[in-house]
Image 1 (cartoon, rainbow, N blue to C red):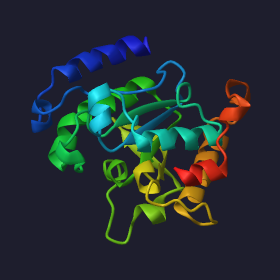
Image 2 (cartoon, rainbow, N blue to C red):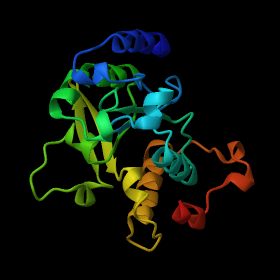
Image 3 (spheres, rainbow, N blue to C red):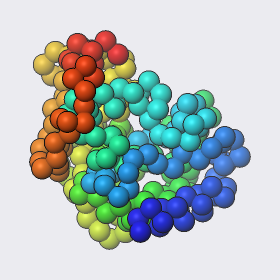
Image 4 (tube, one colour):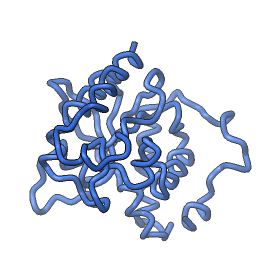
Length: 219
């Protein structure tokens, strides 16, 4: 049922030209993950060049790093997480989407959340956070990340947490205590323990593919 409902939303999204981004896209980037099993919705910023070409979110270098961090935390990208962005089309030159562009795409974002009805929402990066929370000048993602909060979508409240965007981690390689990558590990383990305490993907991962701290630091 979820897949059928989401397919209807996808079809409407594919024909949408509610903002200028519709004229420059190669593909809409609708989602990734199994809608039937996902208990977490992860919201990123916007598609990049690779995403625009493939039609899938988080498939470039930042996406590969995100997958590695999820795997290390015991979260399956394929089974546990439904991944979307604040907008479905790539902004030119990978710029941050405007408020107008996000507003034009918001009906699709909300519809996806309404259909999935996740146990939690992960707001990945500042753009996703600002789409749900009004911040003052003193509030930054560094101060708010890792804290459980409540966000409302169409009158329904959801448990949510903000994490660093993996593109930020590509510029910060340290795995020392308190570093962005170490904080990312801690946040995702918190999410795993809180939302997916009964899930064990140990048998799904071949031992040679387990992500080590050293491997994460080298990306």
